[in-house]
Amino acid sequence: MYKHKYRVIIPFLAPSIILYMVFVIYPYGRSMYNSLTLWKGVSKYQPFIGLQNYIRMVKDEFFWNALKHNIEYLLAMPIVIILISLFLAFMISQRIKFNKFFRVTFFFPQVISIISIGVLFSYVYHPTIGILTSILHGIHAEPFFRLFGFEGIPVWIGDSRTVMFSIGAVVVWQSVGFYMVLFLAAMESIPQTFYEAAVIDGATRWHQFWHITIPLLWDTMQMAMVFAGLAAFDMFNLTRVMVVSGSTQTRPSDVLATYLYEQAFEASRFGYATAIAVSLFLLMLTLSALTLRLTRRESVEY
Amino acid sequence: MNRTLINSITGKVITTIIYIFLGFWSLVVIFPMLWVIFSSFKTDKEIFFSPWQPPAKLILDNFVRAFSKAMIGQYFLNSMIVIIPAIFFTLLFSAMTGYVLARYKFPGNRIIFYAFLGGMIFPVALALVPLFFLLQSLKILDSHLGLILVYIAYSLPFTVFFMTGYMKTLPSELLEAGIMDGANNFQLFFWIVIPLAQNGLVSMGIFNFLGMWNQYILPLVLLTSRSKYVLSQGLAFLEHQQRYQSDWSGLFAAIVIVMLPTMIVYVIFQNQIQRGLTVGALKG
Image (tube, rainbow over all chains, first blue to last red; front, top):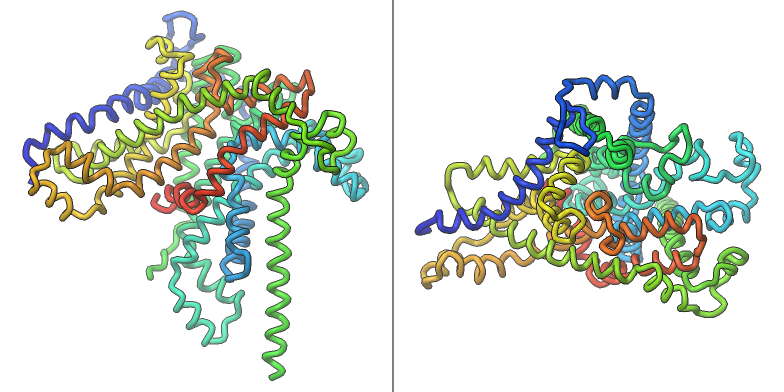
């Protein structure tokens, strides 16, 4: 069918392969090696020091501090995001009025650049001009926060007790619409006859949701778990924009990505930073594999 | 009779509850955006003392200040200078690669496909340091060209993966008809394959556009002089600067300028955008 096929194959593949090898494969490979060297970036001299960067990392309390924060995000965020988005998707799928409007609105934050969102919310949380603070003042919420040991309305980003909650809430706000659309698409592909049969058998809406929708949505939920989990292991953009880096000694909002960025481009410890990056990658890989493994069930064919 | 009455009452109650929840979340989504849009027309004094009132009069001064003095206009232009060619070449190269991988048998085909696929599992953070020094030694650090090349390279894995799948679905008859008509391989690709793959290309164009528009860590590392900053980077810079100057109204105007274009595009193309953005997840 095709004559002289290599005259097409080679020029068609060349640009992608060259760019990919130079700018993607090489840096990743180089990183693996750099993490085994002592390197300040100034000279070409890059002594090989074996696993010393990794040993240093294990002893670095700020590394553990950052990792702990990633794990906290990981434990809280995916669950909250998936619950809310599933709930919204289920409600919208009930063929209600204005469902188009809700769908468009909920997805909205997804198309705004994450940096604008970060800047916007650092003012929503602002202690003097922030709209959240002024709403909470308006409804006299101070006693509520005193129950939890705050002096009044928290200053959100400025308080080490609330900073991670504040950033995590923005992630939830921003990403719920994305997962909702994902779930809605999966729900729409479930044949209507399943529900009709269930109704004949006398199933309530709740039963239908629990015994038809959820099992048939399992694959999509599994994927959503992996995505949201990987997002919890990133968090660079919002943290970097919303919090002044190194603002306090205790580093209450550091995550691995911000910490390694600082180590590399602010402290010029390139070798060490790369060791953190390699660890971050291995953690993400393990995590995804683990999620897929742990949530594996017979997926329902239809 | 009684039973249907109860059913219809509980049905109404449930529907009302559904509306309350959906309405609440809509408010949560819309409110912060509305607040920033209103505030961008106010003076600093109004922002401070009357956060709930709409602006007394529409002051466009904030926008002028944000656009020129805060250089948002320049950043905007820089973003376009980077993103437009980056998208164009990402789509072109991925379509070429996807077409060859989907339609031609040759040794190494699978290896190349999986090599691209594998690129998706690495976090960009892992490549940052070598990338910085690589661009420095190629003399394209702190240049838009450097960022364009990097954007294309990092968009390839997913786009190639997607386009390969897409090219497999194209009807062979049309391609064969093209060959019968005497089209050479390049004509076949540009006159038949590309138009047929239009929908897939549009999806990938949107997907990559929003990805690049959101990109922050790459420009942060690779562009160092302020006059070359892209929008996300410039806005973050402005915010950090604003902590000491507190020109709130100017900053709010800047946020609106950054938000507005994607908002408008979204309202016009919402269906394609929702599909384009979630397509990755659904196919994956």
